[in-house]
Length: 201
Length: 201
Length: 201
Image 1 (cartoon, rainbow over the protein chains, first blue to last red):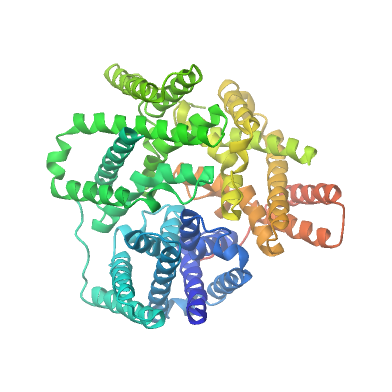
Image 2 (image 1 turned 90 degrees about the vertical axis):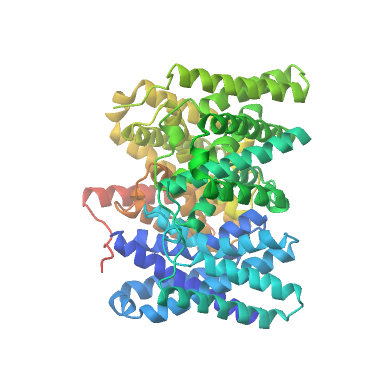
């Protein structure tokens, strides 16, 4: 759990940075940027814990999340031009982040006796809802509804995790395989410009 | 309760279809459409259960909701042109859906000792909040704020339900009368183009 | 607590009026206006109670909030032109409202053993999230992200409250000082047009 906890904080950091960058796009002020970074980072996990009835929600009983988010927002403010050039690194960390959030959501749900399929949905919520709330607050249609195999990578990773879990694979190995799988799917989809069909009338 | 449970699943199905159709309007991809259908179907009940502190929320402990929603989204994808021609049938099912959701919300609230007026609001939330979240995610001002006697039909139905309930009418009969009342109000308002006054400066 | 309770209801009233006025700007109908006023008034406290796991949320177990909100919406409908001329009075009450909501949020959080820094964030959520939800529903980027030292006044007030609290100042006196401080900061910032820097690329 300690490695996962470290990755959880890393994912939180990257999500705070992505939220703050979104805010910069919308010309929000310092407070709006901090707030957007904060919500992006904790939104998914908060919604998951609320739906599961798992109170108090994660970040409210662990000050480390607030510290990590504050660091992320401050870094973005101070080094925004430099951070923009680190797109590949950010992309990698972001993908690790959604992988970790997916796994944490699934494991928490399974431990509460939730049906495996619904646990996958809770894993997905953990990973994507922060971004959905960020886009909704910034008055955009959520990015994951329109572009990229982002959520689907989590979904496939989640199904793999549940499958390996039911085969009795050790949790740490399973976590590693699942995150690797999510990273590979995202990279392949971006390289080959694979996207989902659009529903039209 | 079993008849109401069946209608609850029917309402969930219809709401999933309406959410998926909204997504098609916005040219969302397959995932975005599924997600929007899902949120539309479970949003109202989820918010009601969260406010009431009624955990875990309904759909997370009953896999049938996920199944019904998946069927609704798949049907919309496969037969979207055909479904568009079924407007009257969809309208009827949708109205049954909001009637059922209103009643379920009120009965749950009353059973938890909530004040009757506030129980009506919880019934209203159950019925309309899924659509409000759908419209907000799709970057529209919620439809129920601008058009149609939709929410008001629920509100009047809710007041009728509470009144008959306090008179000691049997629950099943009361449910039937209330749903019939909500359907009739909606049909009358649409036929005669009755709408609420708009607040202007 | 009784004085604070009275101010809480006053704040709820003012927030209901501000929500209804927003709805008028967007040409919402009577129901949309009531709904927006309602959500604006109870949104912040509801979100705070949900995150803290403090169920049932405040307004669902106390009918007075519903009554006060209904009065606020009705007053706005009946006397909207007159209310628009009372901008200064509204501004003062609104500022008292955010001050009271900040303090209530902090005190509730501290009493549940939440870390003081996180308690300040819960105070801030109580004060500003109603307005954030109002703006999101009305399809605007939240006002507090773009204009005015609104949230920062709460933040500074919250830090002051925690500092004085840790020095053992009596709660009632501390409440008075904090609200006065929030009012003074807002007035100074508006008079001298002080605003936060905007994050740009």
